[in-house]
Length: 148
Image 1 (cartoon, rainbow, N blue to C red):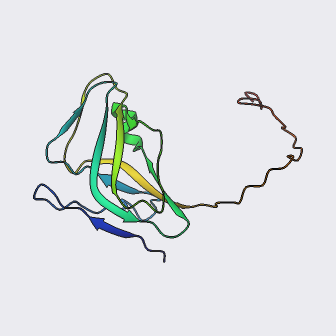
Image 2 (tube, one colour):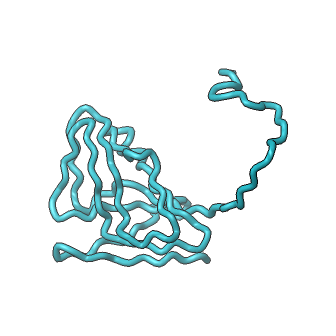
């Protein structure tokens, strides 16, 4: 089994919770807000929310921070950068850049599950400048395969 090191970063007299998988089949673990005071994000507003943890990813792995589908669907809370990327050499606190795409302010409370973290392997190929081979699609752009 692959392991990932996690360091809790206690502050304001509290110890943050560890991320956790909600079910045995969950691919991503939930990240929780670690706040001294609630943070209200106005409609169309953004806020950087701390989690109180730092991680050391396994070799050749990256962390993808993604929105929680329930929050996105119910109240319009998503990630302002779409998907956050944690590189394997980053050792700082995991922060979640939230955006409120809803019509009303949303208040994040300490301990709220605000995002999910997926650990994925990656390939970092050497780059070689060259002519590209032909394909059936060639340079057909966005939506080039049609509707049906």
